[in-house]
Structure formats: C-alpha cells, structure tokens
Length: 75
Image 1 (cartoon, rainbow, N blue to C red):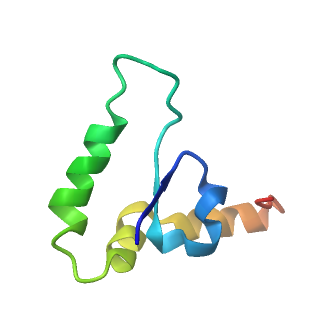
Image 2 (image 1 turned 120 degrees about the vertical axis):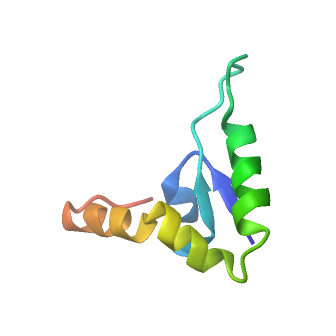
C-alpha cells in the first residue's frame, strides 16, 4: 500500500508507505504526478517491499525524529 499526500502528517503512522508530493493548485506546469508515476513504475513496482524502498529513498523517519526533537507534533 502506498499513501500519496501533500502533508507528511497524513501518513505519519505509516511513514514507510508514504510518498510526499507538492500541493496542487491547478497549475498547468505541475509535474508531480509524472514524477510519482515514474517512481511507482520504475522503483516500487519492481521492489519486494515498498516500505524498505521508501525508507531508504525518502528518509521520513529521520524527518519525523527531527520533528520530535523540536516538539512539533502532527495533529
């Protein structure tokens, strides 16, 4: 399972399943979906466990640990 969202807190309980994207506001030059599709098809699709790949690629655990040290919480 992969969670694609523009807010890290949206998947903070499943960090290794998340893909963070920029917010979309009807921009004609937005290319995030193409980049996500490329990552999904060329990296995750051929992986055994998306959680391991996402953890190595995005390092969201390190980011959330940084938030914890600064007392920033996802609500």
